[in-house]
Image (cartoon, rainbow, N blue to C red; front, side, top):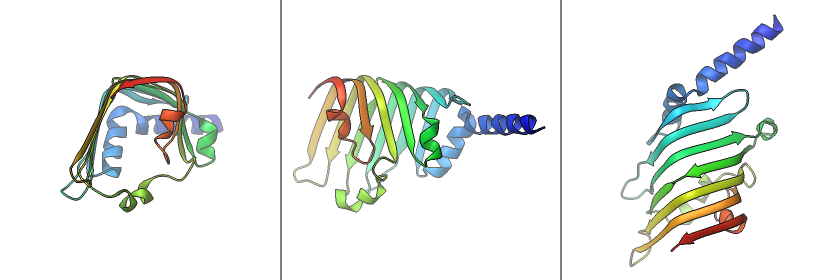
Length: 177
């Protein structure tokens, strides 16, 4: 009977992390953001995520930053031991043709509190193929624009508390400025 209870709990949890349910929950939590993707979402108990045609949009305003992210595909595993420790570690992240558009309208000091604590959310052994990033900083005068294209990173590590880490903690990488 304990085995059946565990099996039922895992089945219920799996139902909560399949794409339609996961997207609905995520969109409620990240409002005013919008997340969409195709594919299965999470597979339990392996904690593997697979998605295609990912789109994430965080609506901005005249005073708030705006973020748009898309990727042809994403795949990663969540390390279960770190979840038990209250941390998230994504391992073997694979991003294909990701695109990030970031419109900065707030000074950094106004939003640093939004970053997770050091080592709370990490990526280990990440690979990016065919990525691009577009940043427009409206806090500067004149407005500053920068674009990176053809981003290829292999075996990159990143702590979300300091996202620039990925540029210095990758086994190999290249991009066009």
